[in-house]
Image (cartoon, rainbow, N blue to C red; front, side):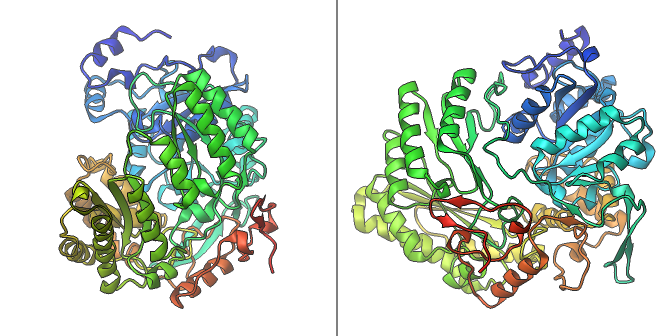
Amino acid sequence: MLIDKELDRVLKKVEKPARYIGGEVNSVIKDPEQVAVRVGFAFPDTYEIGMSYLGLQILYNILNANEEIYCERVFAPAPDMEKIMREEGRVLFTLETFTPVREMDILGFTLQYELSFTNVLNMLELGGIPLRRTDRDDSYPVIIAGGPCAYNPEPLADFVDAFLIGDGEELLEAVCIARKEALSKEEFLKSICKMDGVYVPEFYEPEYNDDGTIKSVRKIYEGAPDRIKRAVISDIEKAEFPVNNIVPFIDTVHDRSVVETFRGCTRGCRFCQAGMIYRPVRERSKETIKKLAVNQLENTGHEELSLLSLSTSDYSRFEELATELMDICSERNVALSLPSLRLDSFSFKVLQEIQKYRKSGLTFAPEAGSQRLRDIINKNITEDDIYSAVEQAIDLGWEHIKLYFMAGLPGETYEDLDGIGEIARNIMDINFKKRGRKGGRFRVTVSVSNFVPKAHTPFQWAAQDTKEIFIEKHNYLAKKLHIKGVTFNYHETETSSLEAVFARGDRRVGRLLEKAHELGCRFDGWTEYFNAELWQKAFAETGTDIAFYSSRERSYDEILPWSIIDPLVSDAFLRRENDKACAGKVTPDCRQGCAGCGINKYTECFKGAVGDYGKEA
């Protein structure tokens, strides 16, 4: 569809018009009159970020393969575009047909990070859609949401009609088909709430104790399940995966072909939500990965190929796959990117091969500065692992090492922070011993993020450090890391505290979110747009106690806001892991023996070259 004259005039005034014009290679154009269901896939951030999200490409491909469904894309307009839209009364529209989003049958948001929540409300408002679900009748689209943040749906429960929990490849299409068959929104919601992975918040009502904790959750519609089991695709080898990916006109955050090698993780880091909610590990075959990679490269013209997983080198046939992909990429003059590598001898051989001429920074994620704290978080790496990998990197010519740590982990002391400084200093010493003054260009970057307790992890009960404690720790680390050749970066404390409020918030924090949106908060994950003063005002005006949600430790007896969601990893396992953390005990990788997380009661666990796992001892 052609851009109308008014939009053409507007686009001449904004920084990046290509964010709003659609029409890219491999985008899908259908006749809206010939489909039964129209879906707006909404990413609550800018085009460049949303188009880097593989899940969008996967679901866009699956839905549009169905002749009865038309999936169109919607992104948050940048502030310059939003200003003009509000001034001129232009409503939010889809990229494929420039249709106002309120004309969709379903408007679905992907929730990848909590600090995008104000953008969700802003996009609804820009689309002329009432924010609260109770204010929307059948003339408006059904608002759904999914993604990792949907595992605690309660902060958005007053605004979203239904949440999709778990793998979306099969579930989202089933929900769209149900929308075609339903006569009303109420009928639609009652039909889909029986599907695994669908949570309809209007069918449940939380009740609270005098101290603000949840007393119980009353079920309003008896046909709704007591708990919502996460949707799982048991065999991703057979799952649809895109090879005709949309090719943006402008640079995006990740401008490359991407193939998912496997889903899930066996390592069991206790702070990591992804490692819990994406279990079990499910692999694609080496042959399928290569075929997908070749087809994607041919259909997109990308000059870089990247593999996607939580830990790339944990793929059971990684050495064979990496070697064969290097040959494929070399033949096509395409760069190969292998993130999240376990830095062993083979990985270094691969890195040496793919970065022959220009060695980018090498990344290590010790997460904690002492072995004691790494055992608490179940990181399962030692200082010997770190230093031996650094020595290999220096021998092979790397001149920049990036180290990632967390501050505020459960059980952390200032001795653990001292350890961060010691690791950085020791790495500089290793370089000097090996290279002498010739290694003067060598540098180390230490990045420290703040621990945020997440739902469905062993640390979901833990208290987060207060803002004051985080600032104190950052200042302490700045002194410890005042080392020549070392750069220290740390995460903002205000946003970390806010992230914790929404990561562990109940339905009442929706009032806070609505007030923040009303005050003008949006793009809170962007340093240049985050406004701490406005958020402080929102907390004050809604009477929301930030400490109640962020820095309060929970007991095992407390009903958690996300208890309605069953991630298929058992509560008993999470409690055991938290108890082991308190005792400083580690849990081995699942491939060395089942830890009894409970996932194998619902779906078969991975059988790989390292050995079967998923059978409880």
